[in-house]
Length: 480
Image (cartoon, rainbow, N blue to C red):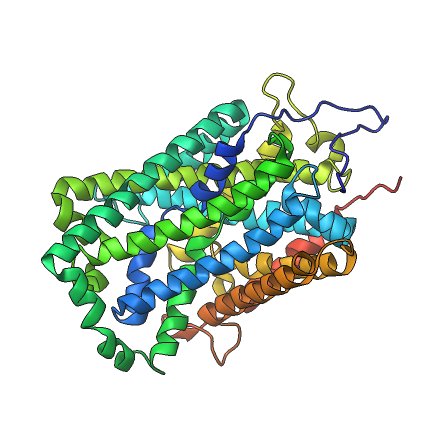
Protein backbone atom coordinates (compact mmCIF):
# COMPACT_ATOMS: atom_id res chain seq x y z
CA UNK A 1 0.00 0.00 0.00
CA UNK A 2 1.34 3.42 -0.97
CA UNK A 3 0.78 6.14 1.63
CA UNK A 4 2.30 9.49 0.80
CA UNK A 5 3.99 11.51 3.51
CA UNK A 6 1.33 13.83 4.89
CA UNK A 7 3.70 16.09 6.81
CA UNK A 8 4.45 19.61 5.62
CA UNK A 9 8.01 20.87 6.06
CA UNK A 10 9.50 24.32 6.03
CA UNK A 11 12.72 25.35 4.28
CA UNK A 12 14.81 24.15 7.24
CA UNK A 13 13.35 20.66 6.98
CA UNK A 14 11.38 20.99 10.20
CA UNK A 15 8.06 19.20 10.35
CA UNK A 16 5.23 21.73 10.50
CA UNK A 17 1.85 21.40 12.13
CA UNK A 18 -0.53 18.94 10.44
CA UNK A 19 -4.19 19.38 9.64
CA UNK A 20 -6.40 17.88 12.32
CA UNK A 21 -8.38 14.69 11.64
CA UNK A 22 -11.73 16.32 12.37
CA UNK A 23 -14.21 14.86 9.86
CA UNK A 24 -15.92 11.47 10.08
CA UNK A 25 -17.77 9.32 7.56
CA UNK A 26 -21.12 11.21 7.86
CA UNK A 27 -19.43 14.49 6.93
CA UNK A 28 -17.67 12.87 3.98
CA UNK A 29 -20.93 11.39 2.67
CA UNK A 30 -22.63 14.76 3.11
CA UNK A 31 -19.77 16.38 1.19
CA UNK A 32 -20.58 14.16 -1.78
CA UNK A 33 -24.37 14.42 -1.53
CA UNK A 34 -24.46 18.05 -0.42
CA UNK A 35 -22.06 19.30 -3.08
CA UNK A 36 -23.75 17.51 -5.97
CA UNK A 37 -27.38 18.16 -4.99
CA UNK A 38 -27.71 21.91 -5.26
CA UNK A 39 -29.86 24.04 -7.53
CA UNK A 40 -29.41 21.73 -10.53
CA UNK A 41 -31.92 19.10 -9.45
CA UNK A 42 -34.67 21.72 -9.21
CA UNK A 43 -34.34 23.42 -12.59
CA UNK A 44 -32.69 20.63 -14.63
CA UNK A 45 -35.90 18.58 -14.36
CA UNK A 46 -37.54 21.16 -16.60
CA UNK A 47 -34.59 21.09 -19.01
CA UNK A 48 -34.89 17.31 -19.33
CA UNK A 49 -38.61 17.57 -20.04
CA UNK A 50 -37.93 20.17 -22.72
CA UNK A 51 -35.18 18.02 -24.28
CA UNK A 52 -37.47 14.96 -24.46
CA UNK A 53 -40.63 16.96 -25.17
CA UNK A 54 -42.24 15.51 -22.06
CA UNK A 55 -41.28 11.86 -22.56
CA UNK A 56 -41.07 10.80 -18.90
CA UNK A 57 -39.51 7.32 -19.41
CA UNK A 58 -36.88 8.81 -21.71
CA UNK A 59 -36.09 11.49 -19.14
CA UNK A 60 -35.72 8.90 -16.37
CA UNK A 61 -33.34 6.95 -18.59
CA UNK A 62 -31.23 10.09 -19.06
CA UNK A 63 -30.97 10.65 -15.29
CA UNK A 64 -29.99 7.00 -14.77
CA UNK A 65 -27.35 6.99 -17.54
CA UNK A 66 -25.62 10.11 -16.27
CA UNK A 67 -25.85 8.86 -12.70
CA UNK A 68 -24.18 5.60 -13.70
CA UNK A 69 -21.35 7.56 -15.33
CA UNK A 70 -20.83 9.45 -12.07
CA UNK A 71 -20.89 6.23 -10.03
CA UNK A 72 -18.32 4.63 -12.34
CA UNK A 73 -15.89 7.52 -11.93
CA UNK A 74 -16.47 7.65 -8.17
CA UNK A 75 -15.77 3.91 -7.90
CA UNK A 76 -12.46 4.36 -9.72
CA UNK A 77 -11.44 7.16 -7.37
CA UNK A 78 -12.61 5.03 -4.45
CA UNK A 79 -10.08 2.38 -5.51
CA UNK A 80 -7.38 5.04 -5.55
CA UNK A 81 -8.45 6.36 -2.15
CA UNK A 82 -7.76 2.95 -0.66
CA UNK A 83 -4.10 3.16 -1.75
CA UNK A 84 -3.07 6.83 -1.80
CA UNK A 85 -3.31 9.39 0.98
CA UNK A 86 -1.75 12.81 1.53
CA UNK A 87 -3.34 16.26 1.31
CA UNK A 88 -5.83 16.65 -1.54
CA UNK A 89 -7.30 13.38 -2.86
CA UNK A 90 -7.42 13.77 -6.63
CA UNK A 91 -4.11 15.67 -6.65
CA UNK A 92 -2.52 12.83 -4.66
CA UNK A 93 -3.77 10.32 -7.21
CA UNK A 94 -2.37 12.40 -10.07
CA UNK A 95 1.02 12.68 -8.34
CA UNK A 96 1.42 8.93 -7.76
CA UNK A 97 0.17 7.87 -11.19
CA UNK A 98 1.32 10.64 -13.54
CA UNK A 99 4.08 12.36 -11.61
CA UNK A 100 4.60 15.53 -9.62
CA UNK A 101 4.45 17.83 -12.62
CA UNK A 102 1.04 16.60 -13.78
CA UNK A 103 -0.28 16.78 -10.22
CA UNK A 104 0.87 20.40 -9.97
CA UNK A 105 -0.93 21.50 -13.13
CA UNK A 106 -4.08 19.63 -12.14
CA UNK A 107 -4.02 21.33 -8.73
CA UNK A 108 -3.31 24.71 -10.35
CA UNK A 109 -6.29 24.29 -12.66
CA UNK A 110 -8.59 23.23 -9.84
CA UNK A 111 -7.66 26.07 -7.51
CA UNK A 112 -7.75 28.81 -10.16
CA UNK A 113 -10.52 27.67 -12.53
CA UNK A 114 -12.57 24.65 -11.47
CA UNK A 115 -13.33 25.35 -7.80
CA UNK A 116 -13.69 29.16 -8.02
CA UNK A 117 -15.70 28.99 -11.24
CA UNK A 118 -18.31 26.70 -9.73
CA UNK A 119 -18.17 28.32 -6.27
CA UNK A 120 -18.83 31.82 -7.61
CA UNK A 121 -21.81 30.62 -9.65
CA UNK A 122 -23.30 28.86 -6.62
CA UNK A 123 -22.99 32.12 -4.65
CA UNK A 124 -25.01 33.85 -7.34
CA UNK A 125 -27.55 31.01 -7.59
CA UNK A 126 -28.07 31.12 -3.81
CA UNK A 127 -28.71 34.85 -4.03
CA UNK A 128 -30.92 34.40 -7.07
CA UNK A 129 -33.34 32.00 -5.36
CA UNK A 130 -33.38 34.18 -2.26
CA UNK A 131 -34.22 37.15 -4.49
CA UNK A 132 -37.18 35.26 -5.95
CA UNK A 133 -38.88 35.57 -2.56
CA UNK A 134 -38.74 39.36 -2.93
CA UNK A 135 -39.30 39.62 -6.67
CA UNK A 136 -35.76 40.80 -7.48
CA UNK A 137 -34.49 40.62 -11.04
CA UNK A 138 -31.86 37.92 -11.67
CA UNK A 139 -29.25 40.49 -12.73
CA UNK A 140 -30.24 43.14 -10.20
CA UNK A 141 -27.70 44.91 -7.96
CA UNK A 142 -29.43 43.35 -4.94
CA UNK A 143 -28.77 39.83 -6.18
CA UNK A 144 -25.15 40.63 -7.07
CA UNK A 145 -24.46 42.19 -3.65
CA UNK A 146 -26.11 39.25 -1.90
CA UNK A 147 -23.99 36.86 -3.99
CA UNK A 148 -20.84 38.63 -2.80
CA UNK A 149 -22.03 38.41 0.79
CA UNK A 150 -22.80 34.67 0.43
CA UNK A 151 -19.29 34.12 -0.94
CA UNK A 152 -17.63 35.96 1.94
CA UNK A 153 -19.88 34.33 4.55
CA UNK A 154 -19.01 30.85 3.26
CA UNK A 155 -15.31 31.71 3.30
CA UNK A 156 -15.57 33.07 6.84
CA UNK A 157 -17.31 29.94 8.06
CA UNK A 158 -14.61 27.69 6.61
CA UNK A 159 -11.67 29.89 7.63
CA UNK A 160 -12.74 30.52 11.23
CA UNK A 161 -14.41 27.23 12.13
CA UNK A 162 -13.84 24.19 9.87
CA UNK A 163 -15.75 22.02 12.36
CA UNK A 164 -18.79 24.31 12.16
CA UNK A 165 -18.53 24.25 8.36
CA UNK A 166 -18.67 20.45 8.50
CA UNK A 167 -21.76 20.54 10.73
CA UNK A 168 -23.42 23.05 8.41
CA UNK A 169 -22.72 20.71 5.49
CA UNK A 170 -24.53 17.89 7.28
CA UNK A 171 -27.48 20.14 8.23
CA UNK A 172 -27.82 21.61 4.73
CA UNK A 173 -27.72 18.14 3.18
CA UNK A 174 -30.53 16.92 5.45
CA UNK A 175 -32.62 20.04 4.77
CA UNK A 176 -32.18 19.89 1.00
CA UNK A 177 -33.35 16.27 0.98
CA UNK A 178 -36.66 17.27 2.63
CA UNK A 179 -38.37 18.80 -0.46
CA UNK A 180 -36.84 16.14 -2.70
CA UNK A 181 -38.16 13.34 -0.49
CA UNK A 182 -41.58 14.98 -0.08
CA UNK A 183 -41.99 15.43 -3.81
CA UNK A 184 -40.74 11.92 -4.55
CA UNK A 185 -43.22 10.30 -2.15
CA UNK A 186 -46.24 12.63 -2.06
CA UNK A 187 -45.97 13.62 -5.71
CA UNK A 188 -45.91 9.99 -6.82
CA UNK A 189 -48.89 9.05 -4.63
CA UNK A 190 -50.95 12.08 -5.69
CA UNK A 191 -50.02 11.55 -9.33
CA UNK A 192 -51.11 7.91 -9.27
CA UNK A 193 -54.43 8.70 -7.54
CA UNK A 194 -55.25 11.57 -9.90
CA UNK A 195 -54.08 9.71 -12.97
CA UNK A 196 -51.70 12.55 -13.95
CA UNK A 197 -48.58 10.43 -13.52
CA UNK A 198 -50.00 7.57 -15.58
CA UNK A 199 -51.05 10.03 -18.27
CA UNK A 200 -47.57 11.60 -18.35
CA UNK A 201 -45.93 8.19 -18.70
CA UNK A 202 -48.12 6.98 -21.55
CA UNK A 203 -49.60 9.80 -23.61
CA UNK A 204 -46.61 11.86 -24.73
CA UNK A 205 -44.19 9.17 -25.86
CA UNK A 206 -45.18 9.21 -29.52
CA UNK A 207 -45.34 13.00 -29.60
CA UNK A 208 -41.89 13.23 -28.11
CA UNK A 209 -40.45 10.83 -30.66
CA UNK A 210 -41.84 12.96 -33.49
CA UNK A 211 -40.95 16.34 -31.99
CA UNK A 212 -37.29 15.74 -31.28
CA UNK A 213 -35.18 15.97 -34.40
CA UNK A 214 -33.70 12.55 -35.13
CA UNK A 215 -36.26 10.69 -32.99
CA UNK A 216 -35.88 9.32 -29.49
CA UNK A 217 -32.11 8.84 -29.67
CA UNK A 218 -31.55 12.56 -30.25
CA UNK A 219 -33.96 13.41 -27.44
CA UNK A 220 -32.17 11.04 -25.07
CA UNK A 221 -28.77 12.49 -25.90
CA UNK A 222 -30.01 16.04 -25.40
CA UNK A 223 -31.50 15.03 -22.05
CA UNK A 224 -28.24 13.42 -20.94
CA UNK A 225 -26.41 16.64 -21.81
CA UNK A 226 -28.92 18.52 -19.65
CA UNK A 227 -28.30 16.22 -16.65
CA UNK A 228 -24.50 16.03 -16.89
CA UNK A 229 -23.93 19.24 -14.99
CA UNK A 230 -26.48 18.50 -12.28
CA UNK A 231 -24.26 15.62 -11.17
CA UNK A 232 -21.01 17.58 -10.94
CA UNK A 233 -19.19 18.34 -7.67
CA UNK A 234 -18.69 14.94 -6.04
CA UNK A 235 -14.90 15.06 -6.48
CA UNK A 236 -14.74 17.92 -3.95
CA UNK A 237 -15.04 15.34 -1.16
CA UNK A 238 -11.52 14.11 -1.92
CA UNK A 239 -10.09 17.53 -0.97
CA UNK A 240 -10.58 16.80 2.77
CA UNK A 241 -8.83 13.42 2.89
CA UNK A 242 -6.01 14.91 5.02
CA UNK A 243 -8.67 15.98 7.56
CA UNK A 244 -10.74 12.78 7.34
CA UNK A 245 -10.61 10.13 10.03
CA UNK A 246 -9.43 6.79 8.59
CA UNK A 247 -9.53 8.13 5.01
CA UNK A 248 -8.52 4.85 3.35
CA UNK A 249 -11.76 3.35 4.65
CA UNK A 250 -14.12 6.31 4.91
CA UNK A 251 -13.41 8.12 1.62
CA UNK A 252 -14.18 5.14 -0.67
CA UNK A 253 -17.36 4.44 1.30
CA UNK A 254 -18.41 8.11 1.11
CA UNK A 255 -17.82 8.32 -2.64
CA UNK A 256 -19.79 5.15 -3.31
CA UNK A 257 -22.71 5.70 -0.93
CA UNK A 258 -22.94 9.41 -1.75
CA UNK A 259 -23.08 8.77 -5.50
CA UNK A 260 -25.85 6.17 -5.11
CA UNK A 261 -27.91 8.48 -2.86
CA UNK A 262 -27.68 11.28 -5.44
CA UNK A 263 -28.84 9.07 -8.32
CA UNK A 264 -31.78 7.65 -6.34
CA UNK A 265 -32.81 11.14 -5.16
CA UNK A 266 -32.71 12.59 -8.68
CA UNK A 267 -34.69 9.78 -10.32
CA UNK A 268 -37.48 9.62 -7.72
CA UNK A 269 -37.72 13.41 -7.49
CA UNK A 270 -38.17 13.55 -11.26
CA UNK A 271 -40.94 10.94 -11.05
CA UNK A 272 -42.62 12.84 -8.21
CA UNK A 273 -42.58 16.08 -10.19
CA UNK A 274 -44.38 14.24 -12.98
CA UNK A 275 -47.23 13.53 -10.57
CA UNK A 276 -47.81 17.20 -9.77
CA UNK A 277 -48.76 18.55 -13.19
CA UNK A 278 -49.03 17.59 -16.83
CA UNK A 279 -45.80 17.50 -18.81
CA UNK A 280 -47.03 20.39 -20.97
CA UNK A 281 -47.41 22.59 -17.88
CA UNK A 282 -44.09 21.47 -16.39
CA UNK A 283 -42.27 22.30 -19.63
CA UNK A 284 -43.66 25.84 -19.61
CA UNK A 285 -43.61 26.66 -15.87
CA UNK A 286 -41.08 24.34 -14.23
CA UNK A 287 -41.14 22.15 -11.13
CA UNK A 288 -42.37 24.95 -8.86
CA UNK A 289 -45.82 24.44 -10.35
CA UNK A 290 -45.84 20.82 -9.19
CA UNK A 291 -45.02 21.89 -5.63
CA UNK A 292 -47.74 24.56 -5.68
CA UNK A 293 -50.35 22.16 -7.05
CA UNK A 294 -49.60 19.57 -4.37
CA UNK A 295 -48.65 21.69 -1.34
CA UNK A 296 -50.29 25.06 -2.17
CA UNK A 297 -48.69 28.50 -2.26
CA UNK A 298 -47.07 27.89 1.09
CA UNK A 299 -45.40 24.87 -0.46
CA UNK A 300 -44.01 27.00 -3.28
CA UNK A 301 -42.48 29.42 -0.80
CA UNK A 302 -41.15 26.52 1.24
CA UNK A 303 -39.56 25.15 -1.93
CA UNK A 304 -37.70 28.40 -2.57
CA UNK A 305 -36.42 28.50 1.00
CA UNK A 306 -35.21 24.90 0.74
CA UNK A 307 -33.55 25.69 -2.59
CA UNK A 308 -31.68 28.60 -0.97
CA UNK A 309 -30.45 26.32 1.83
CA UNK A 310 -29.62 23.65 -0.74
CA UNK A 311 -27.53 26.09 -2.77
CA UNK A 312 -25.77 27.38 0.35
CA UNK A 313 -24.87 23.81 1.29
CA UNK A 314 -23.39 23.24 -2.17
CA UNK A 315 -21.59 26.58 -1.93
CA UNK A 316 -20.10 25.51 1.40
CA UNK A 317 -18.91 22.21 -0.05
CA UNK A 318 -17.24 23.91 -3.00
CA UNK A 319 -15.67 26.52 -0.72
CA UNK A 320 -14.05 23.67 1.23
CA UNK A 321 -12.16 22.73 -1.92
CA UNK A 322 -11.44 26.32 -2.99
CA UNK A 323 -9.91 27.31 0.36
CA UNK A 324 -7.58 24.31 0.46
CA UNK A 325 -6.35 24.48 -3.13
CA UNK A 326 -3.15 26.51 -2.69
CA UNK A 327 -2.27 24.48 0.39
CA UNK A 328 -2.40 21.30 -1.70
CA UNK A 329 0.19 22.90 -4.02
CA UNK A 330 2.37 24.50 -1.34
CA UNK A 331 2.53 21.31 0.75
CA UNK A 332 4.46 19.84 -2.17
CA UNK A 333 6.83 22.85 -2.08
CA UNK A 334 5.58 24.09 -5.43
CA UNK A 335 3.79 27.15 -6.71
CA UNK A 336 4.28 30.78 -5.62
CA UNK A 337 5.56 31.27 -2.07
CA UNK A 338 5.01 27.71 -0.77
CA UNK A 339 6.38 28.71 2.63
CA UNK A 340 3.46 31.14 2.92
CA UNK A 341 0.62 29.05 1.54
CA UNK A 342 1.43 25.90 3.53
CA UNK A 343 1.04 27.67 6.88
CA UNK A 344 -1.63 26.33 9.23
CA UNK A 345 -3.20 28.57 11.85
CA UNK A 346 -2.44 27.24 15.33
CA UNK A 347 -5.78 28.37 16.75
CA UNK A 348 -8.25 27.33 14.04
CA UNK A 349 -6.05 24.60 12.47
CA UNK A 350 -7.01 26.09 9.10
CA UNK A 351 -4.88 26.95 6.07
CA UNK A 352 -5.51 30.69 6.35
CA UNK A 353 -3.33 32.04 3.53
CA UNK A 354 -4.58 29.39 1.14
CA UNK A 355 -8.14 30.36 2.11
CA UNK A 356 -7.50 34.02 1.34
CA UNK A 357 -6.28 33.14 -2.14
CA UNK A 358 -9.36 30.94 -2.64
CA UNK A 359 -11.68 33.83 -1.72
CA UNK A 360 -9.82 36.21 -4.05
CA UNK A 361 -10.06 33.90 -7.07
CA UNK A 362 -13.71 33.08 -6.33
CA UNK A 363 -14.48 36.82 -6.23
CA UNK A 364 -12.74 37.35 -9.57
CA UNK A 365 -14.77 34.57 -11.17
CA UNK A 366 -17.99 35.99 -9.69
CA UNK A 367 -17.27 39.28 -11.46
CA UNK A 368 -16.54 37.34 -14.64
CA UNK A 369 -19.74 35.30 -14.40
CA UNK A 370 -21.83 38.44 -13.90
CA UNK A 371 -20.21 40.26 -16.80
CA UNK A 372 -20.22 37.31 -19.20
CA UNK A 373 -23.63 35.79 -18.46
CA UNK A 374 -25.88 38.39 -16.82
CA UNK A 375 -25.10 41.40 -18.99
CA UNK A 376 -24.79 41.94 -22.74
CA UNK A 377 -21.28 40.52 -22.47
CA UNK A 378 -18.26 42.38 -21.12
CA UNK A 379 -15.63 40.06 -22.58
CA UNK A 380 -16.49 39.75 -26.27
CA UNK A 381 -15.67 36.31 -27.65
CA UNK A 382 -14.46 35.25 -24.20
CA UNK A 383 -17.99 35.13 -22.79
CA UNK A 384 -18.69 31.56 -21.67
CA UNK A 385 -20.46 29.69 -18.87
CA UNK A 386 -17.88 29.35 -16.11
CA UNK A 387 -20.01 26.81 -14.24
CA UNK A 388 -20.07 24.23 -17.02
CA UNK A 389 -17.09 24.49 -19.34
CA UNK A 390 -14.42 23.77 -16.69
CA UNK A 391 -16.01 20.31 -16.54
CA UNK A 392 -14.76 19.78 -20.10
CA UNK A 393 -11.24 20.03 -18.75
CA UNK A 394 -11.55 18.29 -15.39
CA UNK A 395 -12.95 15.10 -16.90
CA UNK A 396 -10.37 15.22 -19.65
CA UNK A 397 -7.61 15.50 -17.04
CA UNK A 398 -8.88 12.38 -15.27
CA UNK A 399 -8.14 10.22 -18.32
CA UNK A 400 -4.29 10.21 -18.06
CA UNK A 401 -4.63 9.32 -14.37
CA UNK A 402 -6.74 6.27 -15.20
CA UNK A 403 -4.38 5.21 -18.01
CA UNK A 404 -1.32 5.48 -15.74
CA UNK A 405 -3.18 3.50 -13.07
CA UNK A 406 -3.57 0.60 -15.50
CA UNK A 407 0.13 0.72 -16.37
CA UNK A 408 1.55 0.99 -12.85
CA UNK A 409 -0.75 -1.01 -10.57
CA UNK A 410 0.46 -4.46 -11.63
CA UNK A 411 -0.43 -6.16 -8.35
CA UNK A 412 -4.16 -5.49 -8.74
CA UNK A 413 -6.68 -7.93 -10.14
CA UNK A 414 -7.95 -7.71 -13.71
CA UNK A 415 -11.20 -5.94 -12.80
CA UNK A 416 -9.67 -3.16 -10.67
CA UNK A 417 -6.65 -2.71 -12.92
CA UNK A 418 -8.31 -2.76 -16.35
CA UNK A 419 -12.09 -3.14 -16.45
CA UNK A 420 -13.09 -0.34 -14.05
CA UNK A 421 -10.59 2.27 -15.33
CA UNK A 422 -11.44 1.53 -18.98
CA UNK A 423 -15.13 2.07 -18.25
CA UNK A 424 -14.21 5.24 -16.31
CA UNK A 425 -12.18 6.51 -19.28
CA UNK A 426 -15.16 5.95 -21.55
CA UNK A 427 -17.39 7.80 -19.08
CA UNK A 428 -14.98 10.75 -18.94
CA UNK A 429 -14.76 10.83 -22.71
CA UNK A 430 -18.53 10.97 -22.92
CA UNK A 431 -18.64 13.85 -20.41
CA UNK A 432 -16.14 15.84 -22.49
CA UNK A 433 -18.00 15.16 -25.71
CA UNK A 434 -21.33 16.09 -24.13
CA UNK A 435 -20.01 19.45 -22.96
CA UNK A 436 -18.46 20.26 -26.35
CA UNK A 437 -21.64 19.15 -28.10
CA UNK A 438 -23.77 21.34 -25.85
CA UNK A 439 -21.71 24.51 -26.17
CA UNK A 440 -19.98 24.34 -29.55
CA UNK A 441 -16.30 24.69 -30.39
CA UNK A 442 -16.19 25.63 -34.09
CA UNK A 443 -18.15 27.77 -36.51
CA UNK A 444 -19.94 24.66 -37.74
CA UNK A 445 -21.62 23.90 -34.41
CA UNK A 446 -21.14 27.13 -32.50
CA UNK A 447 -24.06 28.56 -30.58
CA UNK A 448 -25.65 31.59 -32.20
CA UNK A 449 -26.20 34.31 -29.61
CA UNK A 450 -27.90 37.64 -30.36
CA UNK A 451 -27.58 37.00 -34.07
CA UNK A 452 -23.83 36.41 -33.94
CA UNK A 453 -21.85 33.19 -33.84
CA UNK A 454 -19.84 32.53 -30.70
CA UNK A 455 -17.16 29.96 -29.94
CA UNK A 456 -17.35 29.43 -26.15
CA UNK A 457 -15.33 26.21 -25.93
CA UNK A 458 -12.58 27.50 -28.23
CA UNK A 459 -12.08 30.77 -26.34
CA UNK A 460 -12.42 28.99 -23.00
CA UNK A 461 -9.53 26.74 -24.04
CA UNK A 462 -7.49 29.82 -24.98
CA UNK A 463 -8.07 31.27 -21.51
CA UNK A 464 -7.28 27.87 -20.01
CA UNK A 465 -3.94 27.81 -21.85
CA UNK A 466 -3.08 31.30 -20.56
CA UNK A 467 -3.84 30.33 -16.95
CA UNK A 468 -1.80 27.13 -17.24
CA UNK A 469 1.16 29.06 -18.72
CA UNK A 470 0.95 31.41 -15.74
CA UNK A 471 1.08 28.34 -13.51
CA UNK A 472 4.23 27.16 -15.30
CA UNK A 473 5.83 30.57 -14.77
CA UNK A 474 5.25 30.53 -10.98
CA UNK A 475 5.70 26.83 -10.41
CA UNK A 476 9.03 27.27 -8.58
CA UNK A 477 9.46 23.54 -8.00
CA UNK A 478 12.30 22.74 -5.58
CA UNK A 479 14.39 19.68 -6.33
CA UNK A 480 15.47 17.83 -3.20
